[in-house]
Image (tube, rainbow, N blue to C red; front, side):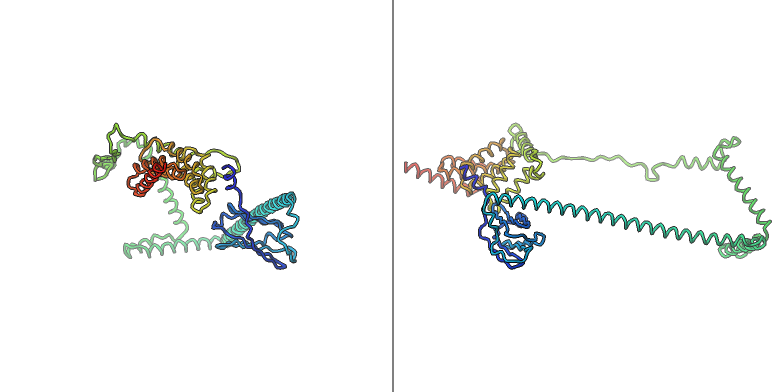
Length: 458
């Protein structure tokens, strides 16, 4: 039995390989056994070629060197086509190296191929790092150049504006006093004309405003002095108002009226304060068909908590394993995919790895029992179903269908082992849990007939 289980894990060597050659290239064709292209591992170096997809394996030590950078792999529906480009144009007449017949020589060639592959991966990584660093330096230089150009453009605009202002000041300083006075009066007159055009009160006021325009520098100075005095007086009044005037501590009657109106205005506006209201909240009651003293609510909650805990267990393994390989749910999905594709030994390995991480998850044992039935390992199936039924305690509604599956699989294994009485017990219990299944009733009748025939024969 142990030898049979170890045989299931051994790879199957691919022998039906077709190949042809020219002076410059070699074409190989390997069979593809209903497996996804992402699950096919192809390794090619200058003197070594390996193709692996569980459980099939093929390797060859090439007679001469090939250019591994120009290797082409094409995945078709039923074949894997590989094209190798020869380094030296010639006819090999034999694909494999004759020296690879010796076991020690094969180990030496394989070690050389692995070292060559590691060196090539290291060189590719260094090249990617170098290219990335070069691109980063180029991007930095480009950004610095753009920033420098923008600074030069702004500086040129500033310099042009400085030159223009400097030129205007030089022209102003070159004028004598009379010309300066004449230009200033013209500027004031232009302002008066604009005011006359914008006045909307009528032509009389516009003429009056125009008459108030000063015509000499003395009147302009007197007007500016008057504006300055008015500004100082207004500023002094503001200071007195802020600090409080001792002569008028209570303020004017108009100010009192304004303050009274402001204080009487409600904060919430004209609508008034919001009205009080009440809301009611209702919760959906949990319904149990039986009386409270017979309820299985506590057992059901314990089962759900235990099942969730078993699904979230992740044990620390070796540092070489990936994070998803330490997740029992990820391993379970992987095993289910193997089972659907017909790769039952790989499915058993994946389920076993998940059980080693989370041994309290009953669905893992039930699914692995299905694989054991297909491979005619009925005793292992009975063991896994019994373990699953033990983990499915307490028996609640949440795990009812899981118990039905475990009982049916164990009953099927008992039938194959000719233990019809035990099989009948499991099928009867499964029908009690799932009375809607008419197939179970038919199987029970068949088992009872077999038990009757066996009793008659004995």
